[in-house]
Image 1: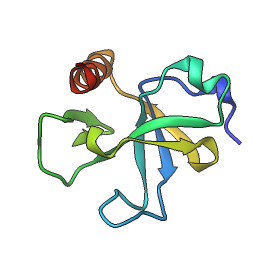
Image 2 (image 1 turned 60 degrees about the vertical axis):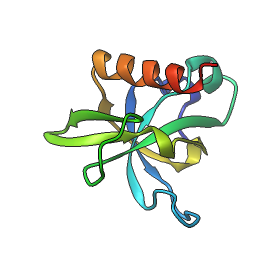
Image 3 (image 1 turned 90 degrees about the horizontal axis):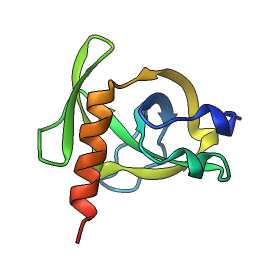
Image 4 (image 1 turned 90 degrees about the vertical axis):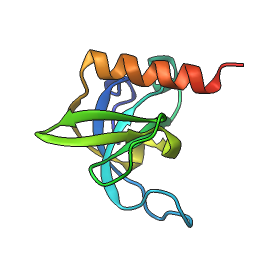
Length: 111
């Protein structure tokens, strides 16, 4: 199991997302951790947003370049997963990308 204290916002982890239901993102893919450390230190779950290189841009999809590929962070597909679904750490998004991602979430859920 992943050490709870080793998971941090902005990190990219390879995660098993199967089995999906209908239109959910499927398979094992990179995901960005978007939940705060206060959650990871006490819970077995982490909130992630899957990444893709094959999708259409939208206001709730954050463009990025990671591992030499252009892609999107799919905020419309974020979910809480058990840390047992995390396979390995692949790196982290830039501070600017994390800031943009968190700002988009704040705007989405603001009153």
